[in-house]
Image 1: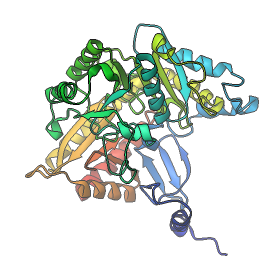
Image 2 (image 1 turned 60 degrees about the vertical axis):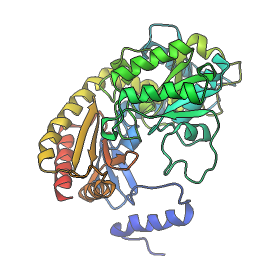
Image 3 (image 1 turned 60 degrees about the horizontal axis):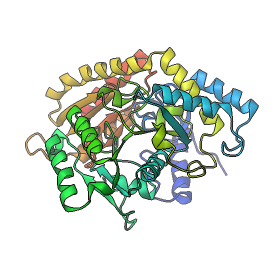
Image 4 (image 1 turned 90 degrees about the vertical axis):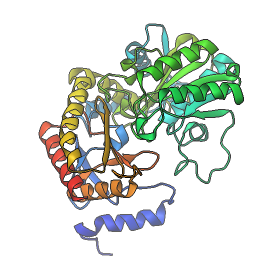
Length: 429
């Protein structure tokens, strides 16, 4: 059988994918990656792309950071799996110690490690239920907390995540997330919680309230300060635990190590994943020590939870974040992107709003006359950019938002090149 030419390699692999993989695993592009470095990747045909997606916020330290690669190789030379619950290892403990120290909150904390973001979320709910003896959980519309059943129940977006999967786990309640673009205020959200307590669920049955400081899949809507302060007060009044989902916002992306630091409010439990281990599957749940210890031995964990390879990568990532001042760089890159986008608004009237928290920047598209969301226009920009060699991600309940998740290690020249391609794509659409 003849090998496909370079120009046909992506198409050939796409045909194999469609034959071998279920359609439920949605794929954004037909670009099959062959290699990557920092903020650039090359497909099997040799075409280069600038990566403004970072594997959905996973690569704050970029593709194949030399320090991460070195740490992984060193760990491979020692051992690559034992299961922490059978024969523990120092790396797991060391990472828990560091996360206890750097997460917001001046109180004793403990951390458990898992594999995926949704595992951290599910275990946060388990811990909250064990600590309070309650069952109900409150989440927000537009939220994304994962694809397992409890994660889906918490997620506030039906398509494509919940469609076709039947009834969700019970006793999960949603209230509107405040977003100017959606016409929802903080007062609307707080009044919805008050109505919920009056009409649907006794607050004395609520174990936890979970929130993303910046909604990821929901559209990069930034939670207002007043909302966080009010939620903390509501939780304190009713003995409810506050879970802050930092899976996408964590590790420098917002110009703080954790987005929660912008608010001056303490969480009882914090979930994290994505950029924690620089591309290796690892997540963590950090919380008040007294709350975390509510679960009996054996109630937390998993065969691969806290895998030593991923743990070694995570320890390297934390060193890199500090050594290369990536928290500050996120802020600087976000400001640079905002300054680049602002003049374009006059030339692209479909840009309804540009919003940001540090380096987490989003651009929302709506019809300038009617205010109707423009998902097709948004997808056209994404497709044009991909053709030009720029990888962009969309999000939002209506699919009308482009979110920017470039590696924080991106070189200045590559970032400038990416911004130029972005401008060209916006003006061509």
